[in-house]
Length: 286
Ligand SMILES: O=C(O)CCC(=O)C(=O)O
Image (cartoon, rainbow, N blue to C red):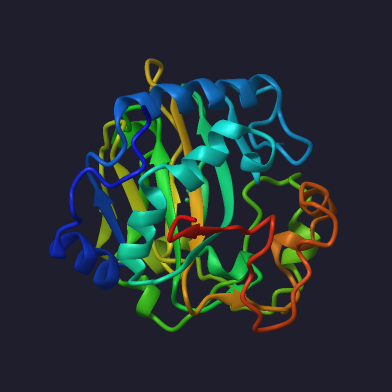
């Protein structure tokens, strides 16, 4: 039986680490049966990439950095993870939200020997959403080590009051035309931005998750290990004050992403709460 409830109450320290630092590790949240089931589900997707799936690793190079979006709309295991696992309750408690809806899932796999990094970025500029109750839960299905692609987060950067223009994760991913319209600040060179900053990073075991705020700057290196895969999915949840932001230049303008959604389900008015078949209410449970 796959548990749908949190195995323990969150601690006050976990909640304040998330709110103050903009990222926190929450250990021992998913039982092994969820991990085994999702490991198999991820491998199915890797063997049968989606129509919006992106190979960030060029063909001639070693390893594989694969990304995909809205996998839950075609895979029942991804759907159960975002909806029927302990994660909606976790998101509600960390955000302090009464009602939580699901925005989308993003699969992010770095196979052994993958050089491609994930560039330093904040999530919010990529998304047509605004508000404070917006949260990502990064769920790894393999042990993650610092040299296998652990994600790193700039402490407190969600409170800097700055948003930097989105960057494409891969050169040929098809998103560059959208992002050039965003109008946000151009990010200074990464070394300059990271100089003197406290950077949070954690090695994790399957069952642990990492949560981060949509304005937190984060990045990861490639997977330099030959013995460890790094399969993970980032689940994006929206709470009480999150709503549609009609500004131009977001990833949902990409026709390949729109084609994943039931017709018209990505059209909202500015300021409207995004709840429909494609963005379902997941907490409290029906
Ligand atoms: O998995 C990674 O390398 C990056 C994760 C990320 O950017 C995210 O969860 O928003």
